Structures are given as structure tokens and as C-alpha cells.
Amino acid sequence: MSKFRVELDVSFNNEDDAIAFLNLIEEIKDRIFKGTGQEQILIVKKCRYHECFHDENPPQPCGDYVNLDIDDVNKTEHKNSENVKIEPNTLLPE
Image (cartoon, rainbow, N blue to C red; front, side, top):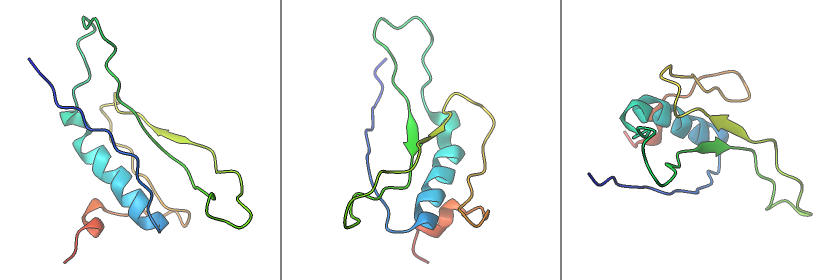
């Protein structure tokens, strides 16, 4: 049976949108194909984020990567630097 692969590498202008997007991934990660272990080709699934400073003048090193565990059945609440969870629905216009 075929699968549908989505690859995405995006940046957000503000932290709250990035955190909301991570929380959206948490909400749907139980729908992501994890593999059976019998595949002949590796099943790739990853999500990671970091604070990026490439557009600074002069450019600065980026922050450390934080990995989102797609395989973990438990949902993690991602929070912004002010320790506030940003709900995924804030990404959509009202």
C-alpha cells in the first residue's frame, strides 16, 4: 500500500506561530505512518526546531535543535520562551 510523504522546511516570523505549529504536529502525530519494521527502505519521520539567527547582521549561530518525538504516543505540550503553550488554532485566521 502506498503512503504519502510530506517534506517541509519553513521559518516563522514569531515564536508563537512556530510553537503553535509544533503543537499541531503533536495533535496529528498519531496519524503519521511509523512503519512496521519490515520495510526494506528506511521510514524517515522527523520534526525539529531551533531559533535561527541567519538574518542577523552579522549572522549569528543558531540555537540548539529541539527534536519532536514522532514515535512517542504521548503528546508533548510545547511552550514559548515565556512558558506559555500556544494552541494550534492560533495559526488560523478567525
